[in-house]
Amino acid sequence: MPSEIVIKCSQAIAEKKWNIAFAESATAGRMSAEFSMTKVSGKILRGGIVCYQVFVKQQLLNVPRSAIENHTPESAQVTQKLAQQASKIFHSKITVAITGLTTAGGSETRTKPVGTIFFYIITPTAKISHRQVFKGTAEEIVLQAIDKTAALILDSISSLKSA
Picture: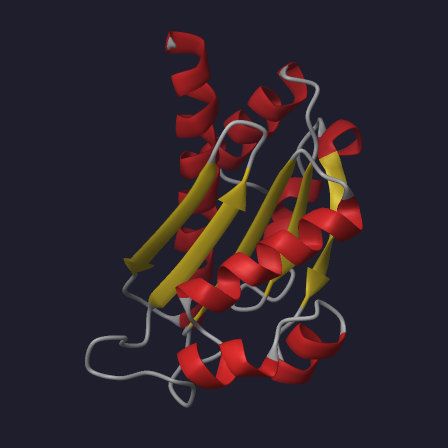
């Protein structure tokens, strides 16, 4: 069952008559699955692409090899490119891209430890770039990242209401 914040986020998207799509690396489809279990999923969910491996990022989403080589597959720059490309594919009002390190063995460093997640969210009114380090098991990191995505989208929608 999706978390409360995913449910609230989905409802807010539906109220705006917007839709959402995902380019998922670190979450490997779990974010699409969580949003698909809300009551309004049929109204809002366009789809998602799991782009876990580098060649999928390059071949399916046209992320330049140079971006991956210069910044690593788990980086703000690659995540932004994933969101931009997925937005074109899905023609979505909201497009979320997520990369990161849920387990050891990727591009982790002292400054980019396991648990580091990169978000890039495109909405009709904002472009949100966010980096956060989460703690826990791989599943806990993924679930925290999904909730953070929902919170970032909700904050963006809420700021429209108060503007």
